[in-house]
Length: 110
Length: 114
Image 1 (cartoon, chains in turn yellow, cyan):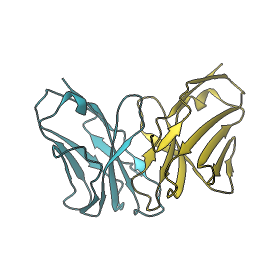
Image 2: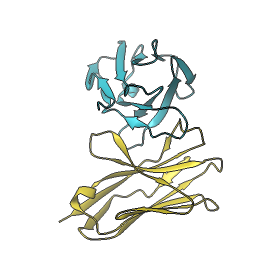
Image 3: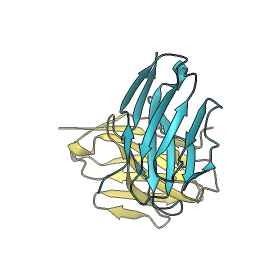
Image 4: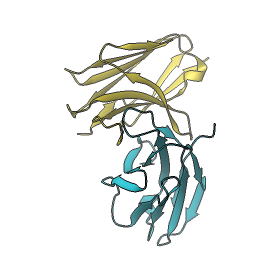
């Protein structure tokens, strides 16, 4: 079983839609959690960290459930510019050796 | 300020050849990481440097892969006797230190082994 598993996707949604990505991790020792965004043929960039209390950044909301080892990302009112691959990322606490999921491709259509 | 830079951006080589990939981290970042990303997959950790020393090289796939960071800044990933399976995007990242700081990724080097 892979350490980080994500929805396989791809997701195709119209502008303005709400879309949710799910991710599970297998190592209960994982301590830090992130969502990264990767545009086609570009490097990954940090979208947001994920905290147990849940956190929101504009149209983006991230949730963490440690008991279920489950992470989610919700995008509201999606824009064309949100089209990208979203990578679920965990690490075991020293903030090196990030472990990435395969990523979920999102395409927002006009 | 300048981000992480990597050279070359693309490298095409023949099976069996030796290649070097270079990473220039953000100035002042003591931690440096190499990852490899195959098509349709997320990046996979290769090696982590804190300063000049390789603190964790557990992700290097075999002894054909080696990386150095002699002065604690620029790093070079070296691959000997390249194989077709080495073809991937090689990403470098740096962070201010290893603990609790965001890793900033460079644009990567796309390696193709024919």
